[in-house]
Amino acid sequence: MFIVGVTGGIGSGKTTVSRYLEDKGLVVLDADRISGEVTAAGGSAVEEVAEVFGPSSVDIDGAMNRKYMSDIVFHDRMKLDLLSSIVHKHVFFEMEKKIEEETSKNTKCLILDVPIPVQRFVDMSDQVWVVTCDTATRISRLLDRGLSYEEAQRRIAMQLSDEEYSDLADFVIDNSGRLEQTYARVDELIKTQLVERGIRV
Image 1 (cartoon, helix red, strand yellow):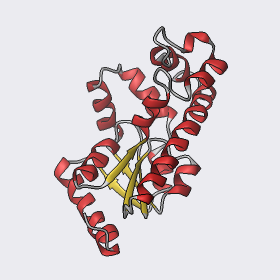
Image 2: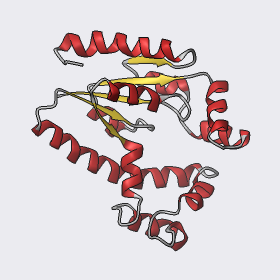
Image 3: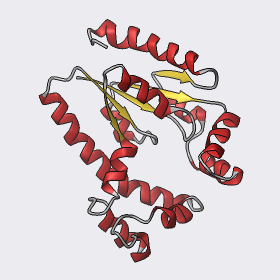
Image 4: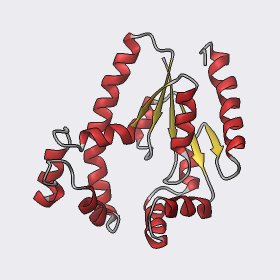
């Protein structure tokens, strides 16, 4: 099975690219979706988060208290890294189970949609496609999501720079322009990197 890792910073359009690949019929494992599952009530990561960050990190329903944790980690890089390490461990465990399931189904290609390209993600991927976008557009998208300008800047600053993301890339998808241009670039990669490997898309 050929595994493509798709990654990019917040507001870059990584999810847009992954959804386009999913619409093309490819199987996508969304780390954000899995993260939501492992930090929901009864999720595998909740107990460990509570042990490290205290009882206030869990809400009344038994899920990770996202508002509380966001207020903490997006002002403290060490705490963000600590939370990420906990959640990533559980996310990748679930991802590996799903990869095994898809392998047993003889799936030819799998897309891993992961926002933070930790080494384990890179090691799991045969190729890494990085989605980039200019900072002004990223901030505009985050403002549309309801974040303040200062919070949008802070979240971008807490992540890898575009240069650091690009250093990990086998291929870069620039999502700064029109959506049609982004889709054209993805279609080009589908043709040259997947179809030419015999993967039907």
